[in-house]
Image (cartoon, rainbow, N blue to C red; front, side, top):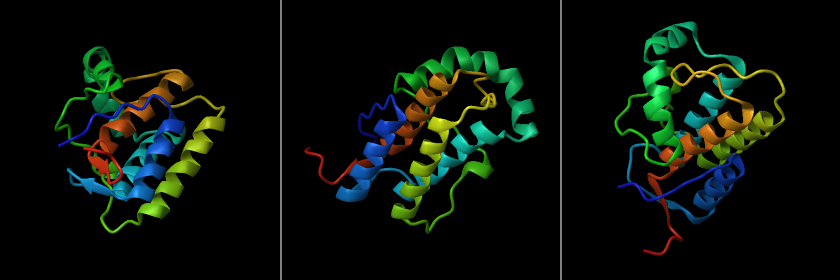
Length: 154
């Protein structure tokens, strides 16, 4: 069962990852903190370096629907459940939480200072740097909500 988690900025993502790393957590999904950080980092890197052409081509027909209906839901913290991710973004098992949190932090720092144009999201299209930052924060919140910090009061 997911808990209510809304993150609007990438700084909030870092804070939540640090909180989970320091307090420990209970999983209610299939991925560990390390796997979630790996997944979010890979999507951010694709935003900066480019998505595979096949992914962009497959997303084009769905883009108007996804941008109008799915993106606002994700940004509001009510993302569509059960959507399968592309295999290249599925994290392997056995990753270390501390290492992957650090790798995500480095990626977020790079994203924050990135000045080249960002690549359009295959399903949601082009956005400003600020809009993509909000998107990545909401995407991280979607996944991190499956981890309940051990220090959270019930």
